[in-house]
Amino acid sequence: MTTLPDPRSLVNADYADGSIYSNPDLYDMEMDRIFMHNWIWVAHRSDIPEAGSFITTFVGPHPVVVTRDRKGDVHVMLNRCRHRGATVCENKRGKAASFVCPYHGWAYGLDGALRGVPFQDGYSGQLDKAKYPLVSLRVEEYNGLIFATFDADIMPLDAWLGRAKPWIDLFMKQGAGWPVKTMGEHKFTFPGNWKIQLENTTDAYHFPIVHKSFLDSVDGETQNTFDFVEGEGYVEDLGHGHSVMVMIPELVDLEADLDAPIPERFQELAEGLSKDYPPEQVRRIVRAVGGSGFNLNLFPNLACSMAFFRVLRPLSVTETEIRHIAIGMDGGPKLGNDMRLRLHEHFQGPMGFGSPDDAEAWDRVQRGSLAGRDIAILLNRGLGHEARREDGNLFSDVSAETGMRAAYRQWLAAMTDVTAACSKNEEESMA
Amino acid sequence: MSITLNEAVELVTLEADLLDHGDFTQWLSLYTEDGLYIVPIDPDTEDFEDILNYAYDNAEMRAKRVQRLLGGRAISAAPPARTIRLLARYRMLDTDETTCTLRCAQMLTELRQGRERYYAANVTFDLVRTETGLKIGRKVVRLLTSTEALTAVSYIL
Image 1 (cartoon, chains in turn brown, purple):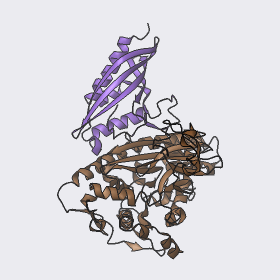
Image 2 (cartoon, one colour; image 1 turned 90 degrees about the vertical axis):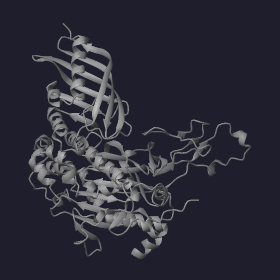
Image 3 (spheres, chains in turn green, brown; image 1 turned 135 degrees about the horizontal axis):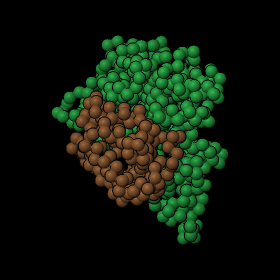
Image 4 (cartoon, chains in turn brown, green; image 1 turned 90 degrees about the horizontal axis):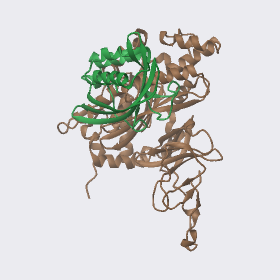
């Protein structure tokens, strides 16, 4: 048996060893200790709007079905028939009354209960259907975000999200009074380790360098808005590996400053909306369409990133899938939602003006970090002027690597001691 | 006289050649002013405006995309991937004196940083006869893998 790598020797407070991106044994440990023992984001409420709605997705490497049953309860179940292990659903989304395994016809309800077994007499009364439902994960929801975990003992989601919760609430103001809904996604892979992507949504430092071409493609006013690296923004450690990076402080609360002037690029939208909405509502919608001024990183797989959800899924130690899920106003004006779609297409996805350049940078980190041995990846930017707020949160300037340090601190806690990472004891001690 | 298959194929072949040889500025001139270049995700939709696409480019966005490819400031396109595309299986779905709809298959091979990648697509062109010749009114590139995870595509399909 091979000796497992020692995570403590690989990640320190302000640097990490380059092998964290390419060590396959470390990756196997991560899939267990992080992806089976933390809350993993699986869906937004609007993905399964009504009874019978389902999507298929993954918790780490494990395929799951996320359903809403007749009572409205959400279930996250392994996509695996209890008989011989075949997947029971291969559709990405849809509506169903039950899931029938195509191999021998075992049928499961929306809550996973085993309802029917063909030719059951062959079991001579020895098959107790109650013992073989689809395997359910623990599920909890906060403000429309649905998370699941294999671990029955970790703290409740509410405590896990903790100081990140007010930021989720702020992010959801992009509904402009309507519920937030998902509006499709861009899905792409890059040949690199998942942590490279985890770092990126809390990395403001790269923006003016990597995204020159995006900045060239927008007007001067928008360029100024995105000129935030030396601005008043900040990165704040929210605990449990979560962090927020505030790039545009005036767009933290979209319902504040409704008297602020409407940017040039939203003038046409504002004029169009004015036909149907009073001035204050127009301003509220316009601000919501522009998106939030911050990235909220939720360890380990979700970011509420300015105007969309960024979801990462490790595929192997050197390959990662990224989804950029567009969001909009459920029931809101078509003009506003269409503009959100066009803004999303402009920056995100495999053909956007932003994501391909990000992917190029991540790809290069993966390849470059293979050079040499025992060479550190630096995580120390902004450490010199990092300070602590009254509530205990560490913070530094917007381009600081405070968010990465927060994520790696949680990574190390999870990798070295699962129960220390997020135990019920901690929850009690915090209370 | 209706637009002929030969006329239509001549234009879309020119487009393919311009894109493969990096002549993006001339490529822009192939489209009508209100023309659209669309790469949808949903393989079944015809309503591209109200749905998320990979690309939904009007004239302004096409010009920006070309600037991105020529500007040398986008790390994923400096230089752009080299591509070779083959168009075939042409079928004229509809044609009259001023407009036609041509559908064909496109097989594209990309090379960048030592990696070859392949994209197969159904492409539908709406062509328009104008005073300055036949132009592209709309091009819709339906990738075979549109609902799968793609990799970065920093060029024009």
